[in-house]
Amino acid sequence: MRGIPTHYSQVIRSGWWVRAALVAVGSTLACDGESDRVLPSVERSSDVAVATLEDPPPTLDPAYLWSHRVLREVQTVSDNDAEPLLFEPSQVLPLSNGELLVVDPTADHPLVLVDPESATARARFGQSGQGPGELGSRLTLAEVGDHLLVFDMGNRQLHRFSLSGVALSSESVNLSGPAGKALLAPAGDGFLVEGLRSSETEWHRVLERVGIESRDASYLLRLPEPSADAEPGRIQQGRVIWTVLGDAIVAMWSARPEVIVYSPTGRTEHKLTLPLSRRHLTEGDIQRQVSLYGAMAAGQRPGPTSLTNELFAVNDTIFGMLLSQNRRAADDPALPEGEIWWRMFTVRGEYLGVLQPPGDYEEFRVLFSGNGTVWARSLDPNGYPVLQELSLVRRDGAVIPSS
Image (cartoon, rainbow, N blue to C red; front, side, top):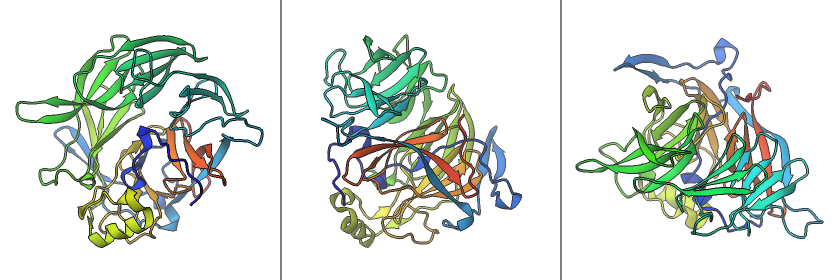
């Protein structure tokens, strides 16, 4: 394998088989011909619409193949560079002025404003650390009005910068307990934070909303949880995954093929049942993965495997599920070892097809998805990072539009 940097940010440490599984994309991409449409049946249960997709085409049906189109690239190293533009980018936020806010966690100043047209840094700012005004390793980026916001989960601070990178304020955030992933709320007036709350007998995963001005956490909704027969302590048994998708919140337990869509106020709007059954990994399956990926695969154990492990939002109504030899439905045909595919559905339940990422996990990592495109980190022939903006392209050449 080509030379690959080893210093990864916390957001992207785990291997691809426990990583990205769902990619949400635009809302108007149903195939035009009626013969191409695979639609769910819809029923109502307790005032909630439940869409069930029962019979999608075979996984790699050539009539349902999507691909990537590279719109532009930002090289991080050139022959004239005294030092690279970026060392190992872990997050990208496209800004309204056309620039990129990039997290480069191993740099002296981990926040970098990049002009993608000239591949230059307009500003480098922020300081890593654990004190007031310093940046931890778990950051959520947002552009709100004329400010850049950096929600620092590790240090429990909300940092505010100007669009040119000038520090304006750093204020503490009041959370009710342990906290995980955070995203900008659908209305853009706060952040959603995954946390834990206790009932009389047990703890539950919840979403809390943290206001930008108040910086206090308030309960929003209880997240999906494992089935009663789930085996605890094994990562392949699943975990809760969620994202913000347009003006909605989408969540699922990664080992159960049910997607739940919530309103911004936390009300369940509808559910989607996917035609996916869980596979059971054998010791032989795991050993084949270890032979391909070494220690990164060694943490798996025989038993039921989760269906997916993450949600990405690009626009507002479509998602795709990661497929691999291990992470595929029990009834799906075997895939070539090492190949990764995304199986794509609309959030209302229509099946769209499959998409193969342009590289394995070490070479290709999604850093941002939204506004109709995906920003990813790829590698050049020398193993240096390259930022790529990609559109997703249907077989007839149609691309996913911006919101």
